[in-house]
Length: 346
Ligand code: ATP
Figure 1 (cartoon, rainbow, N blue to C red):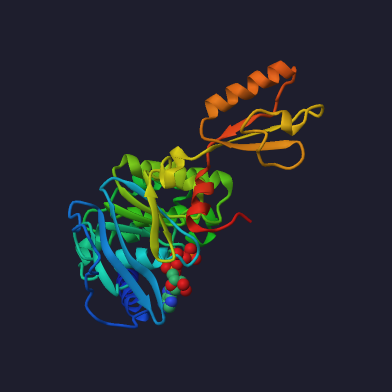
Figure 2: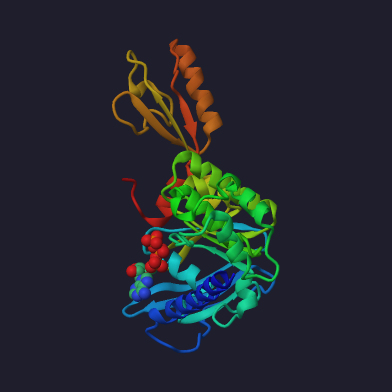
């Protein structure tokens, strides 16, 4: 029992040291946060997260450049952006692990730079890499963390939520990568936080483990949690997020639902098919005669896909040919993302 108590004390001390080091490590300028003059709207004090003019400057480099956004309570927001966009910097400022250079931020109504332990208990953080206690079983780990909170969630319910009931007696150090990640999520949830930060929750997962993780996130949605999710996977963002915020070069370049982000709902459809061998491209109706594509493969962009398809099928029927591999698709979230961030597909 004494050993258990000592571990608990040590763990608390280590957490506090880590937070202190993280807050100090990156500090080129230690001055009080100032509001940027171009910030227009006031902070939304009812939102789970509200940020105005948030700026972070490292020596010689402004990583976050005066961004504004809100996350409503109960919302799942995906934070996307290429490497070096400033996502981790932003998230760590919101978690209270890094200080900002300028701007304002409120997380669950408090300034993360000055919020106290009660506030910390109301947020759950799942980092990309963590080291849960290797020598304890899964259940002991979860019990240990539960001891840090005044009103923890039930242990069994939390293990069930992340699908680790069968591994409750396994020593943490023997878990697979995917199981470790689930344990991370259980540890982030055991304090019954209102807001959960998930940092690339499925990186390194196999396809079936990713689906299980998505079910866990869906379970959190059902519990009414607010989730701020950082990911590089478009399918994950599309499936899980109510809203997406895209960051590039430290600035927000787009914000919207997965269906409307960057005008996705208004973007041209792509119609593709293989031209039958006895026909020539010039014989096709517009816009297909001028379409892209190499060899017999035709690809045309269409802002009126219904009308263009009708014209094409009538033409094919008149010519007595079939177009068996015809495909119509709207821009994918990845197409839009790559356009927004100025990246090119590999
Ligand atoms: P990734 O997707 O690769 O994790 P990110 O969007 O999370 O990238 P950040 O880690 O926030 O990006 O980094 C943003 C920029 O700030 C990068 O250019 C990075 O090199 C720089 N940076 C991050 N931390 C520090 C630091 N402590 N000191 C100096 N520069 C830093």
